[in-house]
Length: 145
Image (cartoon, rainbow, N blue to C red):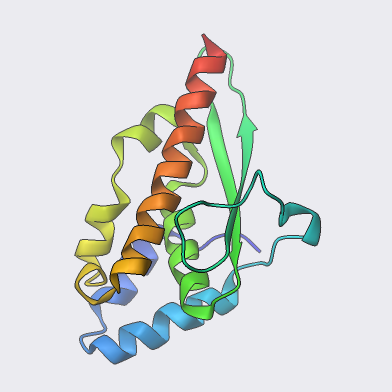
């Protein structure tokens, strides 16, 4: 199942004013996240800095003479975190490494009204996930040169 379109997610969030409904929506999004196969729940995919277990698998699609495209899949052992993973992956997956490095998902979380309501641990986990994705993008660009 493909990731939802990030613009569609932004529009859906704009229609939800109540924080508790947004929270429920994030949990529902998490239920849509296709689980990673057990083999992908490994140390190299594990995101450090998350209180919950989070795994992000990166697939590199090289493009001759252009920035490599990165596609991501992810998983978590916590329902709310699965929803946060889906949002981050929808924001970054399928984009060129140079574009990934120009985008800031923390601004997206602010726009969606999520930043103010995440616990410090969850905020740190989101930052760790974003940094992991950005590190993979930097590595993809380095391997291209």
